[in-house]
Length: 472
Ligand code: NAP
Image 1: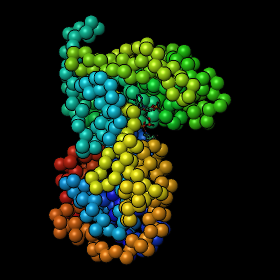
Image 2: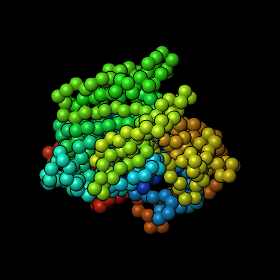
Image 3: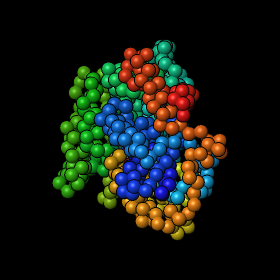
Image 4: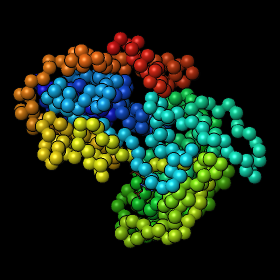
């Protein structure tokens, strides 16, 4: 019997576990997660209105319910939890599938002004991640000529205060996360109510008075990272118009002549062409897609963000851009910085700080350039935060084939008969599958009490209480 620990129960962890048990009948897998809930970014990253992608949870569930796979939630690995070195003693092999837990920084003045959030924080808030900061309200807006001395709208729910007084929002970046947060800002109650998003976030978004959302790329439209399906969806939002500036789009040679572009970029450009020009009048909200604007500074107004100063850029002919020294300020009481995720080091594992990944060879962890026996990586911590969920499948397969090649050497080492018994003896009390099922029941009950379908529990306390009521 080969005992393997997979750290992280998101797509890469689940695909790794699946590949292991499918390929070798002698393997038993424990999937550890620091949260009491499985599915990683499928639960806490995929936007709540993307129900089809969310339904992937059903596929991941069959993996975690496999007879040779065990989910052990609420078990942090590293400081305050199970040290990396201890895991190596408990299992023949350990596969780290811990993703990319933080966001990239812009490194510009004003980045941390009240009212400026990373997209990761915003996504965590509307996804009910228990670590979410709750996104508190920035200081009240100062009186402005158009607002007069009108007081702040009352009754804004707790946890959504940061949306109070926001009329114009800037989303920095043009990847799929930027599209997600732009879309969520434009959604109304009718579309959000059937989702599993927490009630406070739903109420705050439904009550928001945002009328203008600027999604801004530093390079051209043919270099944007979003995928066409996601881009096109922006044009289907009720009561929302989408517009792009034809002159700005035309700065991109790939826009004026897309014939040499790869198919995906060509499709993006064609969708954008349909939005070039003045927006169709009459919509309550307007999404403006902007390009060739590089963020230079977030400008304060009354102690919170009031605008973003961008430098106009031009293509440099090599796929990049050059600054022009000309600047443009875009009004924004809310800024969402959506410039990519970043891996964080895990104490006891090597880390390449420049790439934000763990150094590896075919999924085998490298320590000072040499393969570390029994240690593996898969997913974003292996290859960086790129690709769609399905990209994790071949990535996991590569790691598993390395691991199974090494298995004859690994299995000779003596490990405890049942690592769970050892963890318990050491004071760690994991949430097992029955605990997770109790959370699912509590979320269904919460939804029913609110007249909605399933609604996520939004904090550690309620998750633990539900999990423990399940008897594990
Ligand atoms: P991403 O695709 O890497 O996009 C990051 C964006 O930020 C790019 O437009 C990038 O521009 C820009 N950027 C980076 N640094 C910047 C800076 N200093 N100033 C201004 N702009 C900057 O990252 P992501 O959107 O976070 O997505 C991560 C992964 O998750 C992607 O593979 C994505 O496809 C996937 N995802 C998929 C879905 C879906 O399938 N529905 C949903 C969400 C996420 P440059 O190109 O110029 O660097």
